[in-house]
Image (tube, rainbow, N blue to C red; front, side, top):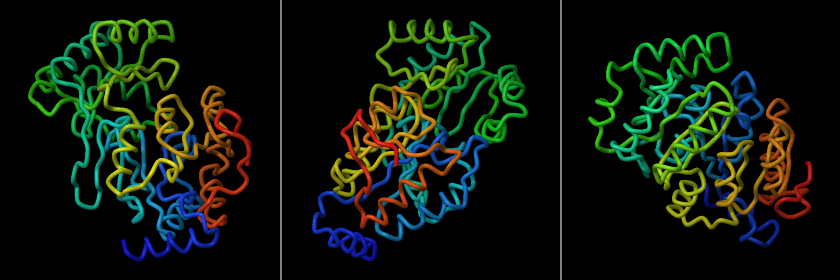
Length: 310
C-alpha cells in the first residue's frame, strides 16, 4: 500500500494539483469492461494492471452476483474489491470478507419472488452471491440463454432449489436481489409498478424485459461511496465508467463520469465524457488517457450532460 501511495503522489506532483487526480476507478462489467461476447480483452486487462501499478484502486461494480464474475476478471491480481448485485454486496476477494451488505429482508424477498413465479416467468433470487430458483425455472433459464454469450455466466451463477421461499427464509441475512425476465416491455413495466407500489425497494430496468429488485440501500453509487470512505477517497477523485441505467447512481458518486459509446442517450447525457464502445476497448482507452495525463483526465471538455467524445 505504501508503494502505491508513493506512486500516486508522484502522479499528483506532475501537475501540482493533487485534489484533481484519480485514486479509484469504479468500473461496470457488461457493456463496459467486457465485449459483447463477454470477453475481457488483453488491452483492457493491461490498462487495469497499469492503473493499479500507478496507485489507483480499480473496483468492479456490477449487477452480476459474485458467482457470475468471469474468471478472466477474478484472476487479475489488481482486482481485490468487487461490488456485486447492483450494490447489495461489497467483497474483498483477497480475504473473502464482506465489507458491506444491503439486502432485502426475507419476507419482502419471498413476497416479491412470487410475482414472476405466478406468471411462469424466468426468475432468480440471489443469496450470498448465487442465484436460485426451482428446477423447472432453472431449465427455462438454460433454454433461454443457450447459445448466447451469457450461457456460461448463467450456468456458473445459478443453482436449483425445490422451494425458493423456504430457502429465502432460511437466510436471515437477507436476499441481495430478485430478478425476472418479463414477456415484453409492457409486462416488465407492469411488474415494476406493482412492486414499487407495494414495497419500499429499488427496481432497476437494465434491459427491455428485465426487472431487478433490491434494497433501498443497494445501488452502485451508495456502495462506491462507502468503499471510497474506507480509504479516505473523496468523490472528486473517483472516475466511474458505465453504460446502463444501473450505472447512473455510480455516476452521481464520482467526480468524473464516462459513458461508453454503446450506452443509450440518457446515460451519455449524464456523463462528463463519452469514450469509444466496449467493442473498441473504450474503457481501456479512457484509463490509458488519464494515466498518460499524470493521473488526471486528458481531453475532457464540457460539464456533466455535455460530454465530449475522446
